[in-house]
Amino acid sequence: MTCSTNEDHEGARELRGMLVDSRPAELGVVEPSAVVAALDRTVMGLRVPFPALNRLPAAEIRLRNTTWH
Image (tube, rainbow, N blue to C red):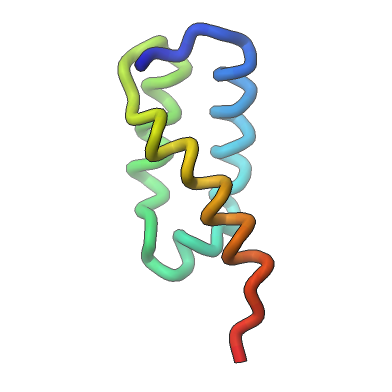
């Protein structure tokens, strides 16, 4: 899929900001540089793995709301 709407571009910026203190990145679940590269391709209008990128916010929210004892 390619990025074609302003909403896609805004989402890409928000995901990039989320990586600053990302729980999945901290736990080694995602590689921030790979996500940033995909987001850069998104903004350029190139094909990116949107299904995987769409799961990142859900994983982030879930991990941020999890208390580890």
